[in-house]
Image 1 (cartoon, helix red, strand yellow):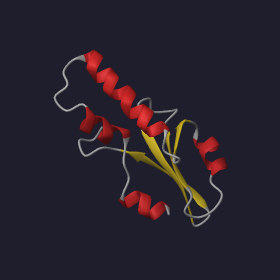
Image 2 (cartoon, one colour):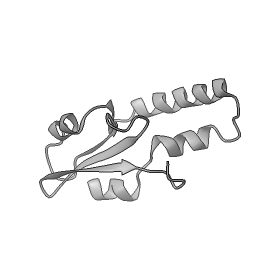
Image 3 (cartoon, one colour):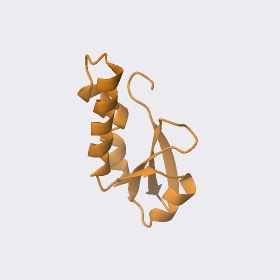
Image 4 (cartoon, helix red, strand yellow):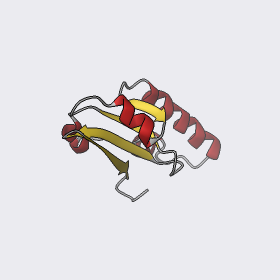
Length: 98
């Protein structure tokens, strides 16, 4: 359910941090970013870039959720979920605030 996802959420930024620790080369960083995106794309809850409206149309019942790339905040990700019949959109922020 959506509430569990809030407790156990994983953002691409957190995944990127774990895969690119100590990486100073921009080329290597981009390669690590590609790996993270490839990993995300295999998850059923990850939907790529989409608007709020598009995301809301995919959610049918309480507990449904997805993670999407934000269309209004480039580079940001949003957890969108259905709770008590209403769609909620939560911007994912890593512990360092990015």
